[in-house]
Amino acid sequence: MLDQTLSIILAGGAGSRLHPLTVERAKPAVPFGGKYRIIDFTLTNCLHSGLRRILVLTQYKSHSLQKHLRDGWSIFNPELSEFITPVPPQMRTGDSWYAGTADAILQNLYLLERSNARYVLILAGDHIYRMDYAALLNFHRDRGAKLTIACMKVPLAEAGAFGILAMDEAQRIRSFQEKPDNPRPLADDPQHALASMGIYVFDMALLCRALRVDHNLAGSHHDFGKDIIPKLIEQQQRVYGYPFGGKTGRVTPDGYWRDVGTLDSYYATNMDLLSPLPPMNLYQPDWSIRTYHGQHPPARMVPGPSGQDGQLINSLLCGGSIISGGTVRHSILSSQVRVDENAMVEDSILFEGVHVGAGARLHRCIVDKHVNVPPGEQIGMHRDRDTVRFTVSEGGITVVPKGYRFLSGPA
Image 1 (cartoon, one colour):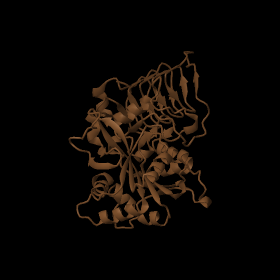
Image 2: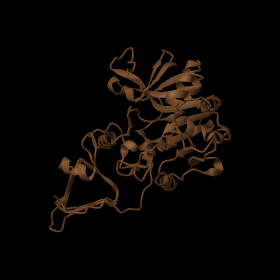
Image 3: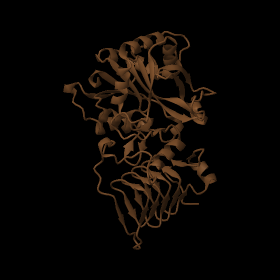
Image 4: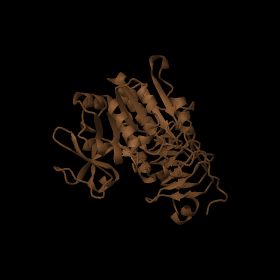
């Protein structure tokens, strides 16, 4: 079945709620966990699931993403019909960019039809989770489904941000509401609702037919959740729900899935990796997350100029980074970061090439690539001052944009 499946990763979103991290990069290309990019989790799931034909639909500021795919994911053999191919908008159905999730695939319908695939697996490139897609595909085949939607329980208070579905005892979906104001709770669990994860398995023939019909409908949003899925359910197509987080598949079940669509959710998901027992285990040897590895020397800690030793407390430290007499506590440091003597980095995420000068203080910050924080500078300590210079999230996370230049010394 795997060799009859074409995988499509939707990776063209603007990621405006992650601004300024998405000023110069697509959301799936935003760094995560020190050494990864967000899209690595979806691609890794494909890799371990045995899926070898993957289209990545790109659009918004895609150079960084395409470079990452080239450098870290040029691993398949085209002579064996294996590929990971980025596909930007090609204006085959008009003169517009991708105008919705369904429209993005419609514009590349010719790639689907000439693939000779029987099934299409549609994925998002901006979620953090581990999942064996092979088990999902087997579920779809065994039930004779035309469309299968991966789903999971979410708290009722958060359900309005998702597509909410209701299943019968045979796991057939009987209703679907896209981001409802009053989500329907589960019958046996009134505090939770059943939410779509934005992961779909379609029979190829049904998908192509549904996309063509939707393309000609006036007033359609050309979106799976708003248009395609509700109509297929109304037509009594065989639409099933696949519960995520069970013991099916080869990956150790943890039920962890996060949409990192906002600065606060992105920060919290990174911080989850620092828990004593992380809710998602990156150290599982048979489901390791693949990424591009730069040629960096080992990370190290050295005394500062006055001989003061550095401290590293419950943090992730990537290759090429140096703590020179500074202190790093409950933080994530990407490659080639330097923390100088008497500097304090706490509850923060530092991207590649950040240099924290002597005596500086960083608290609850995200600092993008190649920022030199001057000696004695304070970030995340005085919100009023930070809001003038930087983006501060609703949850109080201060974000310093890529390449920011400090024009004056510390306050």
